[in-house]
Length: 126
Image (cartoon, rainbow, N blue to C red; front, side, top):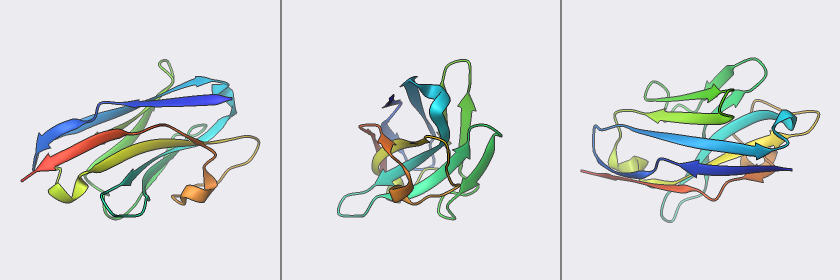
């Protein structure tokens, strides 16, 4: 099994930056894809960025493309999300998720992910 734990959330003013980190423990060799999602107040959870762990290939939702960067640190078993030019509408609970097993897909659909962290809050003030 894999366990995920997010960190790095906090409060920032619009235009600022935050870096989120997702630490993976357990059977990390079984992870094929990892992604970041967020869920704002009264909104559905949405996918932001995904990384294919075995080839370092990334894909972004249009809402964050050019502002957010997903990356992996194999030595630390972490996947980070660098968030720049933050806007008040970026305020949300941010979750990392993993696809584990023998198959996977480069997807931002939450239904594809079988392992989730508990989330970290990001608040952007105007």
